Image 1 (cartoon, rainbow, N blue to C red):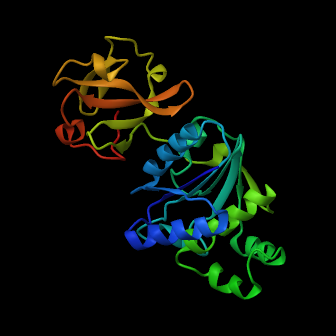
Image 2: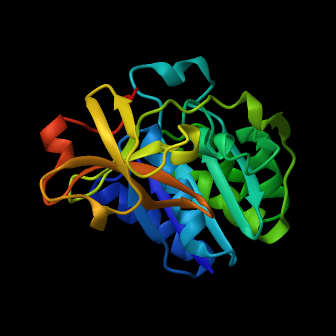
Image 3: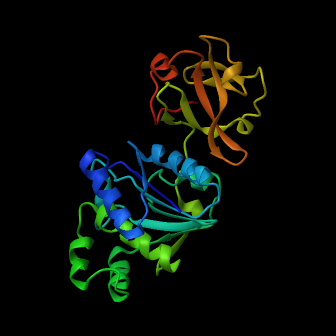
Length: 261
């Protein structure tokens, strides 16, 4: 079984504590993916599911609202969960974190958790102690104190009392860059079929017209282009902005969250 943590609380202390907590519960070494924002988390959810190859797995995701956005909730954005085949995904649900799950229609519903209600169930079933409820409920580090514990309960029990919302209530994903790799290639949230792209076609973007190639190896040296990349799920592979032999992100001054058109 593979366990993946996707989180924007990812300094050495925060990431280590999350890894240790998850390993102590599941007795399995998790993979930690550090992200900066909701779009990065959204794309990495898809890639983690793809990499797991329909085997059993757990993906634990959190991107905390910043700039006071989370204050509309009791104690930060709610968490929810769904199953995709044999994989359990537990995630913060506000904003764009699940927007690519919505785009790919990977589930019909998200099960929204009430933190206190979930903790009472965990205590009743002896997954936590009664005296832990108050502390966990009010924790400022819920992706450490609450989320791994409820994920472990769900892995063992498949479900917990929750409120269903339609996947359609999750935000639509913008046509944007969700990840820049270490070569400067920019992964987008769109697919070639959305533009009916074929070899030699041009895609108009906010940073110029880019010629479409199916593979990076076909792009001429030092030429900018848009290609079908390796990220995605099944036949749906995200377009990437590239420059053969150069860093496209630096050349076009791009980062995750930038709109492509």
